Length: 260
Ligand SMILES: [Zn+2]
Image (tube, rainbow, N blue to C red; front, side):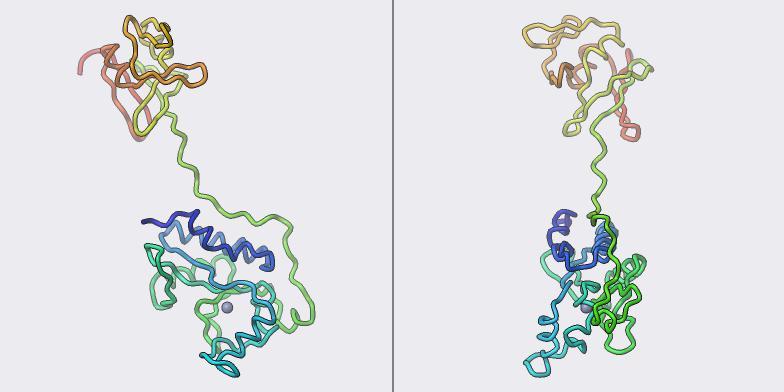
């Protein structure tokens, strides 16, 4: 299974938290998207943390069981101001997450997030924190503690979207002349507008009992969209006695009179 973008967006719901600074959210989405395109699947495992949650975390390994995971008391972490996030990586099948910070993928994540303006916890001089990214906007936590707040952009956070699959239209060339009308691809099968192709081939097109006729033949593969009747390119070619060809690069159906 390849991880879809929609799946990854859902898993990263923590980035929708309005307590996170909008620029942090936006740049994180941009980075996660760029990495997804490279086949690297980032999970934001931590985002905003309240002061109480931070104090709880600080107690771990000190007054509470467990291993020490932070040197920051409540108010001393950029997480408390919505300016930091921690990540993990999904395995390729999406069934597991890993914190293996020695992998090539991990290093790639760091590089991409840095390129988006994040500082990386792995660069900290004391307490290396390799899953951690932050944007301080030049504020020390002591300034943030005293109530100073980095400016927030007013623009909405936009989750990137993969480019929609190119339209399913295809071009048509009949006897060397490109038609103004276009055809449609459905499940890899071309459907061509019968009237436009008939006109170009000099063959009459008519309707009989809801069926489309090309010359004297009733077409069997008709598809009516709006007020245009289509039929499969292969059937049209057969009825006309034409050779049909498909060019994947230009997405063009070519119909040519005569010999094969
Ligand atoms: Zn962190």
